[in-house]
Image (tube, rainbow over the protein chains, first blue to last red):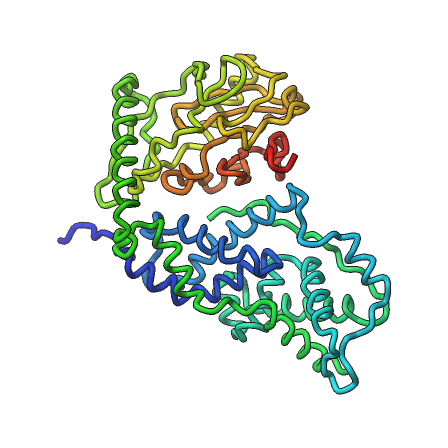
Length: 199
Length: 255
């Protein structure tokens, strides 16, 4: 009769290798929660430092990206919470409101090509993302930027596939309204914080 | 313009703004390695030597602290300490005791200040992770507040570096600071006095990263909220669904 076997865990090198291969997905999750790419890399590093000492808790055979993604979401939400508490929003909500109510011209022509003021459209889009819930924004970015399947998005964010699909579709619908040339319902700048999440 | 065409433009804009930076894999890897202590990072000899010295100093400090700690009495609760390293190490814990109100030079403020927020004695000991019994700490702190052990209020409480301070207008809401043997590096406050009390623990972020693993047991009625600010991690343990004490502190940089 054999005794209890120790649970195998990742070595430091194995952790680093998996971390490296997952970094793009994790970065995108962080950027989605923050609504901005500027702090995503810092979040990624911080999450890595938090997860590394706990790597023994990772169960081999499970999804490493999803496991580390929990840390990323937690750290990103903390950054977001700190930003909110400090009042250092990326953009002034009043400015967003002013621009949307002002009926900006849609910067695409009839063929769907961007006008010269593409930069403006991109800026408005980024600001509009602040009106999305953090996880919804992450779903949208994982789909649009990394072109992940809904099944993959669901796995890394640990949500049902239908929820991932719903987040993407609703986010797109909201952006269509918020970025439309006609004044529509205003986005609600300022992210809904998931105030309780601990990995 | 069709919805699909618009979505295509949105996707293109998202890719322009949110494509992960080039060489992210390598850069993120290297940045993390620099602090993880894996072989590549160890090539940086000066840092390695500095780390060794820090580890030695922290070890001596911890040893001195352990020697000064009274032995555990029979029947006391088991140590709530876990290890993620190859060689598990157990730290002694003591049953709940009266809060230590010793003067501590690392804090500016009244004489009852406690909490070695300046030093992180366990920072260098990356193999040991302490899991404080948060429910026990909460029960202790609530007991202190209900018995009116003490309350240091009305003064400006700041960390030794002055980066994080207790808001002066919030001082009346809080009782403390206290210390708990179950979280020896943390400094505790309780409040507000008129409602279900919440407990706030301040500790160094570095200590959290290396040596603390916070989690409430399954089925706990308490909630855990955390805020990292300027090198300090504020942790609120509360029966409420939202944090109420985190706002009592502020970063001096935000002033």
